[in-house]
Image 1 (tube, helix red, strand yellow):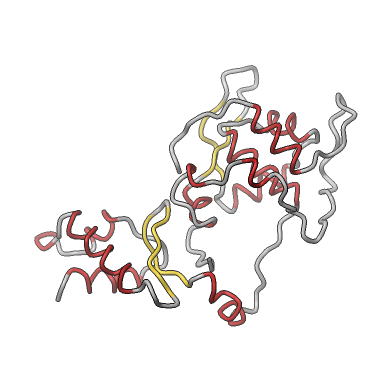
Image 2 (image 1 turned 90 degrees about the horizontal axis):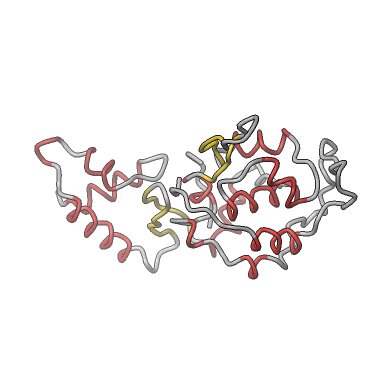
Length: 224
């Protein structure tokens, strides 16, 4: 049996993306192929599926098979549960963390002009889209947040470098349903400003320094 066929079977059976190292370790110790052989097998598999409705995709946390975006309208009808909808406030908070990481909750609030509710941070942590990567060395040592590999996987990215430029997303309307502001979010007392628009937030994010961190959900099989 060829390495290619075994790798293909492993990826079909896996319930989450697999790295080359994980694929290698699935073989008996004395029969493990080297990483180059596995890489060549992955490339051959991807070529085999290039014209099929599913394909092999490399994500931040490994390789997986997934339905192609064009097939999503039909495949999603198989599932009763509708995809979750997120508030504009949550998406703005996530965008600020993604583009300005590492960033504290206070810095996010300064950019957005309103307080960030604990519920939003909890949701992002629970989804494993963000994580605490350190604590800022200032009084109180606030948590510094950054994105995770699960965040990259969910949005079909292999690295932060693949995120669109801020000018490309500044005009997007995050609030398809005009989701009301979370009742727990309150304007900052020291600022009379109301909640900023996505375009304003993007401009403010772009103006600040961008820190480099390691690219860092789970079992969700999202349709792209």
